[in-house]
Length: 173
Image (tube, rainbow, N blue to C red):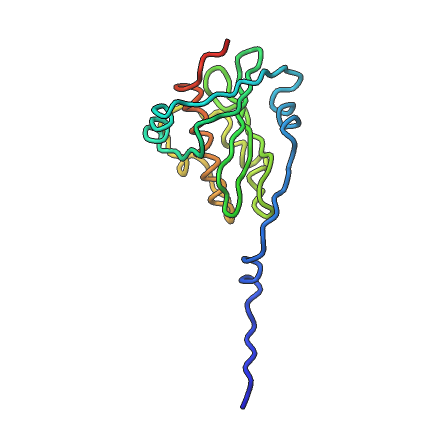
């Protein structure tokens, strides 16, 4: 009787391995890159259940939670901390939004190892200048092969942040 030895393709073994998160930069480093030398004041807030449901329904974007962490600069620009699902992890990033409700910049803080092309200025630079509106994320930004979910979800997150900034942001004191 012959014994058969089957080799499991290396790709299948690699797929089952846990994915390590890569800390690209600290929140403080990202704040300094987006707002060099500016003082930012924390401004955390929670949308009401009605606002949260309107946000998801009207703008057709997923939202993990109704609470948001944000900072306001002295000139009225905002920095939002957000998290979205990647393929095997949660991607953490910050987005700077100016007083005209346009994206000034995006910085990735944490993403899954092997899927961090979203942190490259060539990709996240596509989001600069995006503004509030009912646009379709998948049509607005070029996806990165192998990181399609991360690119779509970050773009949806930016659309969500812009909607919050324009329609649901509580008045700063």
